[in-house]
Image 1 (cartoon, rainbow, N blue to C red):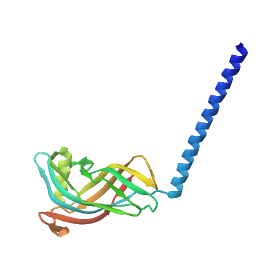
Image 2: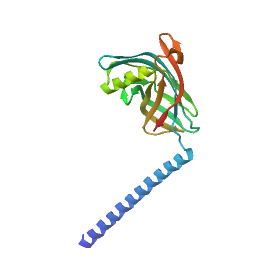
Image 3: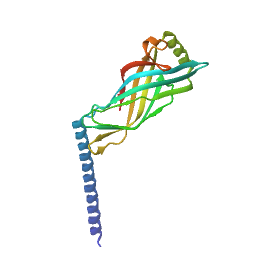
Image 4: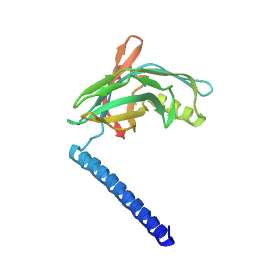
Length: 208
């Protein structure tokens, strides 16, 4: 085989590789365009969460800086989409005070939320002698003295979108529900067994 033939063969192979690469890039662009088009047509909206109520059974600060709490919360989620379903694969719920987590995370049941559907969870979240920073203990003492305490009920986890038979990959979801409670004032809530139930119907912020 002559050197000229070898040169032609190498040039043809390079041209074939360029064509294959171009075809692959066009295919990727088309797939991304279709996904974007479907996304724009369906206009997915993130789920809406509401903190319906909080029942406080225990919320005690002991010396030096330990907080023991036992709280039941009722959280509602609503899927506002009429063409998209939502799989909640893993959701943890817990409470925070001034950005410090004060209860252990509680795992919510996995569920599927269909078009315009609503789910309601009523888990217990608690913490036994959770150490908190000294400055937080001082703030908590002040809040308890005033009778008003702001805690946040948070839900973190993973969800997937479902359109027809297509199911997306996992997306992170972070929900933040402020709960402004009048501790120490039974008249502000409803006595339930050994706890006080506070009706809130508080909308939550949701990031997906």
